[in-house]
Each structure stands twice: as C-alpha cells, then as structure tokens.
Image 1 (cartoon, rainbow, N blue to C red):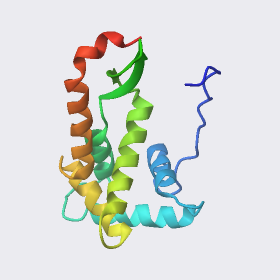
Image 2: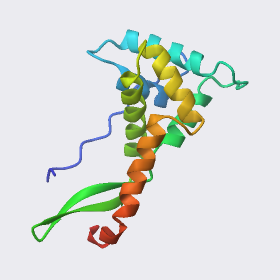
Image 3: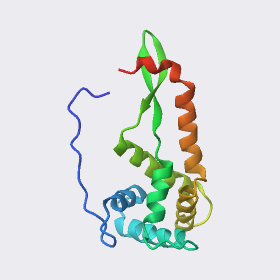
Image 4: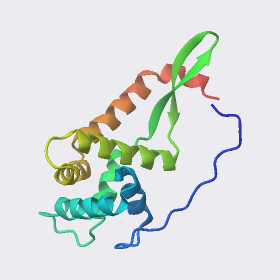
Length: 156
C-alpha cells in the first residue's frame, strides 16, 4: 500500500442526455480504448432495452436499482500479521462499492454470449430484480467476509 497522500477525487462531467453523474461514471467503465461515443451509444441503448416490459417512468430507475442491489457491504482484505496472511473482513467505502458494482456488471455482461448491448441490458435487468451473475458475485463476497469474521479483530 502506498504511503503517499491519497489521490484527489476527480469530478467528471455528467452525461449529456440525462445529466447524471453516476451514468457518466458507468459509461467510463464500459468505455474501451477511449471510445466514449461508442460507450455512450451502447449504454443508452442497453438502458432502453432493460426498461422494456416495465412501467417505470424514469429511464435510469433500472440502472439505479441494479447498482443498489449489486453494491457489496463487506469485503475481505489481506492483512499480514506475524508471518501469516489473514483475510480480514472490512466494510466497503461507498465510492468503492459503486465502482465494484459497475465493474462486476460490465465484466459479467461482457462474459455473456451475443452482442454486448443485449448482454448489458440483460445483466442490468437481472441485477435490478436481484438475480444474475453480478448478484451472485456480491453474495460470494459477503459469504467470504462472513466466513472470515473470526479475523475481524485484525482490522486496524
């Protein structure tokens, strides 16, 4: 772990269509090789596809619900104590929880077969309903933290 000062938080501009900061961060996670316009198009179309069949008025409701469901509350971090390495359960900072949720949704969507747009829409819809691979990853993370709660006293 670096002993230098913490990196300053960089504020990004909200997305152009919905003027939403969280959506802009999600687009940056989806973006590959600096192709932001392609990432914007894919995310907007995936959001539209994911809200089909639901009667929600807000187009970002599915994304917000999916991120809320996928965000982990606990995770394990390795701590070296006296020659042994322990997996110590720690609470997840809110910004890191959102970043992990974004990353898990995008990674599991890209692992699906077919077009990424459809896969992302499916993953968002399933995560909003409390199902899918990203939810399974969150549950596995929580189980790992629960199993190692005996080492919680190493948290410092």
